[in-house]
Image (cartoon, rainbow over all chains, first blue to last red; front, side, top):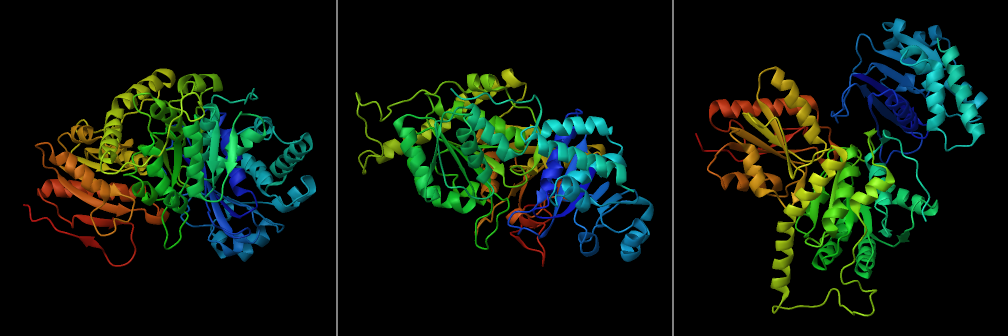
Length: 187
Length: 410
């Protein structure tokens, strides 16, 4: 079982991102789960979304998990949220930031002993440059594809196009651009 | 003619979206609704399907849940296939009309996305609303995941509309845990789903002007009792139709449902009984404990009403300790399901040690580890030969330990 925890603000698209990832993963024949802890959360409030991926049907409905991947799509949450909660010795972190990896880690003590497992990508800038709005979820998917090695980029792009098929072509193209840019720039 | 909706063999849907598609595929004529969290997306998506031409139906906007169910009663009495959805406070406001719907024998399908009742206000999942409506004379089916929310909806129309039943049906799913968790779903294609549900057969429809009928007439002590007894009898006897519909559904999809679901109960020494997603969490725990040598099993009423009194006793088998978990504040008594399961077991000659846990109120997480702890506690009762804790306890509660009643049995 692979478990993923998203740290986001309500409105940044973590739920959509988690569901989009679930959609793509399901096409590989795997079982998926995508859920969030929200409800009456206000737009902008810190929230978490989750994915589980397994070969067998997922019957575990607890909210608790020891994540294999932590995806932080809001730059400030890396500083204010406990992104290392319940992590494992192998948990990988992908954090959106405009800082270099060294600068980011220098400012967050909890990441200093995990620095080999920390990756950075500027999802905010990428989404502004490609989609034209600060929607960091799609670029994060590109970074995840690269770091997890779970898919070939072309396969992921092809499936993601199908997930987005109800949107205008321009939106699909800009999302593909965002995923590809993040895939190529995550460090 | 409605537009075709493209459906893949595997979709990643949450429980709400799955239920909405079932309503679309059943070609529901009228949805009268007043949306409430967490059930909102069911009726919202139905409205979306209507507006985008995917269904020839009508979405009726009303001013309250009381009016929503009243609209359903009117549309069903007029002769249409009718459904809606609600949760929690909305369900509470509907209660008066729920009794009207069942008393008038109208086969409405109500999706109840289970949520806690205020006060304190809480939007998350527990079974307070389900328990509030349990005596309303409806058939109550319970889904443990999103796939089942879809499947139970399709079955609900077939069961409720059957000429030997003609009763409204609730389909329950856990708020957020099922309703907002996307998982792999294998839906039927539209033609197959509609063929399974069948064309709606009106009975005594009010719009048949050649044959005027009255709905909701007044009966005092001369007839009221006979009406209610007949209604109860129809509900109790709906078990045959429920079994038939589940059998047909299995033939079509390979997915098997029973009025009481049991997991590893054949040789179980200890058992836990629950509803909703907790059933799957318990199965996961039982599976893991079996590897450690603990003979754990899980019992789950799929059909909460009519209550499967005889089958519950049967599946308990030779279990020495049975724990019944109620996800609703019991309000000064043992948990309601504890009472019902205890009565079912008592009707047999067996005397397992039966205990009660209240848990998960207002969406408090129920983990696999906690499930395992409860199984192990049952094993301790079984080994001791008596209940080693208080009979009613609280799982996952912060603060001082809370519990009630002790067993004098040794």
